[in-house]
Image (cartoon, rainbow, N blue to C red):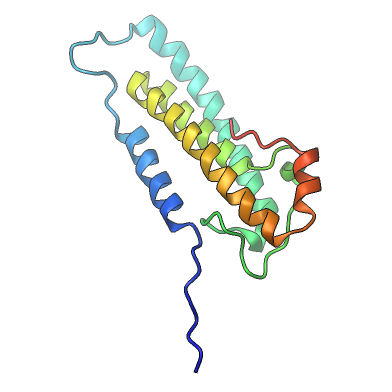
Length: 157
């Protein structure tokens, strides 16, 4: 009787993403000993945050919808999945990461929180690394991925 070996789906990447997102959300508005941003700055930042958050939500939802049954929280593609190249995936290779980053940025702006903003930048670096790992798996699974990657930018921010 053959045993099935559990395949790495990228669980550690999902856990790291969850930790960073929680850090962005839970970060204080300011660091002790540093002044708070003045109200004259916080109000426009909040308005910008609403716009950026709406855009990020739209991009992330468009990416999730385009993936349909291919959607997974893990960076390794589904066993029975197909490569999606249409819709928002015809514009950017990682729209869900881009949308989540915009939402994190929006949260930072709404709260006028420099610590959240710094953590959002760290999240952007994390998503860049995660996208690179994911693309290795996509290249292994889909022979047409290399041509797709030449046509469509990877940007995650």
